[in-house]
Length: 312
Image (cartoon, rainbow, N blue to C red; front, side, top):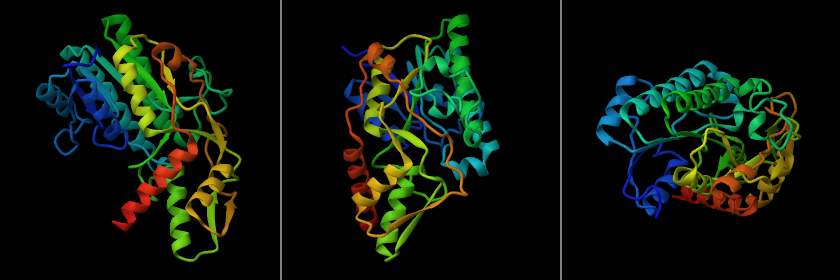
């Protein structure tokens, strides 16, 4: 029987990209899911968090809610990205342990890793350097929740676990050009360029930077598995373990979207951390997680979803 069966699980950010995949999986395990909507509960405010806990009375809290974006959004809003993410998480953990929540699952970010961490990133490397400058405020805001999670376990015996997912993608992703991440941004660029009869698509950077991507449904499964059976202080990576250069990624998306033109690389634009690839062995050893969706299949599903929404 699943640990989650007949338990109330509050999922902050449950109506978002990852939450829409996670919540049905929790319900399949027999959980009663409560999703605090931002219009009803401002989780940056202590009063909003306390009302959410009073209204839902959860035994488990899964904290997905975050203010996120791509390189340009991080450059424009470093203060907001730091404050909103830090204050939400810090106050939520404190209120949850005082309220008597049995378990908290905190979702961190690959952006917390040092800029030049050796690849694949191992969890014990997380404190061995400063994050990539572009998204350091966001990465550090999420990283302090690991400190809090471990400190609360030591002092209060509070069962809080911390997961580090790599870059997510999939159907339902954010395709807003002002705030989207690289995969939805590229999909939109190539599709719009093809529809407009353009001959080229401009992509930021040199294309040499490398990334690892995790399909959103796989990420949701990993979180559920950790919520069910992981109860240790050490952080755990969630990823596919497969690295790809941005240049190769762009070429794949160009092919899958059918864009006939060429790619132009704007080398004056930033491209973020040089490499990102996770060691995923701890997740497999501790709770049996392994990503099942290969990149081409995931990209095809994401492109199809976006095209269907445009037509609709």
